[in-house]
Amino acid sequence: MLQSYEAIYDHGQVKWLGDRPPVEEARVIVTILRGNHSCSVRRVPSPRIAGKGRILGDILSPAAPADEWDCLK
Image (cartoon, rainbow, N blue to C red):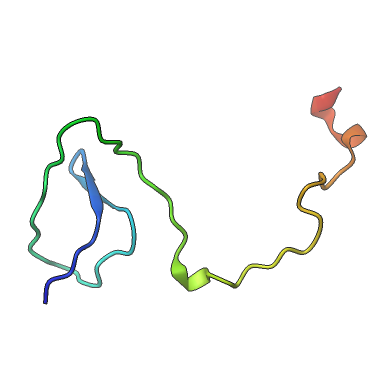
């Protein structure tokens, strides 16, 4: 069975952009994309945590009043 997994090869390391394949060892085919492609690693949360977070309070106001912040003085 053929499955695709997206990754970036950077200085001898493979950085997975999504889920990792569920294997310890595999033969791979590498496609080289030349040109102005961004090689930054895109962080994507695991789909296993989707819908499990809760907002417990006001997300717009700071947690502490501004007069308690040393950096503002």
